[in-house]
Image (cartoon, rainbow, N blue to C red; front, side, top):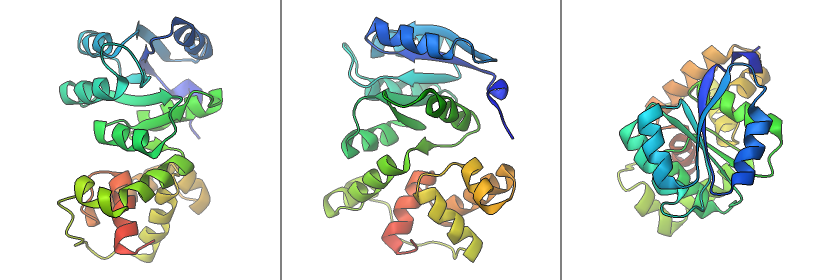
Length: 224
């Protein structure tokens, strides 16, 4: 079982309010092996520092001057795909969640989230997962499935896919609910590594780009 001692990553905090940055630093400063290497007060500075200092993870606000967090996320991901971005915001609308997913964010947290959720999200994305709460993910999926959004978001989707096994369908259901690989592993009493491989297989069979896209395709196809 992984603990906070195993995080071992570098972090940049991006928010236009100094008091928020200070609060996040205080929340995270004593986490072993989690190193806060820089802060930024706007999106332009975040993009510049991400290129210069190359943090492993970025905690990114959305509403900021000069450049918002969604645009900054997209630019960081284009320049450094290996940098992982977690959106940390007060915005809980489906529109903001969708824009964050499109920009390449791997996590989406609300600013009133407890410390444990912040650490769990950092841990999950450090392991290559995409972590969005089940409530926010379901809202985003519902929005993606609307007639207006479907052709815009997934214009290439011909609904062709390889058959999934009963076990893969079970895991896909957990993914669509917003569960992490670790949580799915606990439900099914197998290792997280096993779940990670099966999720990758599911994504490949559904011809999806990531686990969120896989959930969307599954709903559209009628698998879940």
